[in-house]
Image (tube, rainbow, N blue to C red; front, side):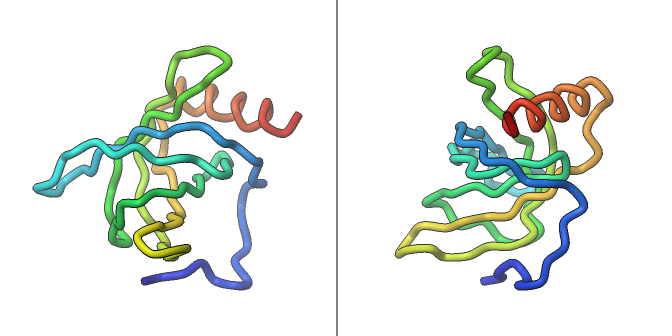
Length: 116
């Protein structure tokens, strides 16, 4: 298991964000969608909790649920760290890949809204 570095410096400020995230692994035989729960969010990634273990490096196609608008934001990203928080319960650090311009604008607006 890989844990986040204690002295990790972030390029983007994180905001509390408690919403569901639907994620499907990319490029693996297992393409079953997983329900994750976001804990925090930034323009560069998010932290989620899940009962499903995912290896570092796993790429995901994610739909970030937006309760205010109802229209999810679709982004791709990868697992950069995994921490077991309880038996069969994990916290994952996910880094976004370059989102499309439209998704990037919506993501920025979501992060700003979460800080208010």
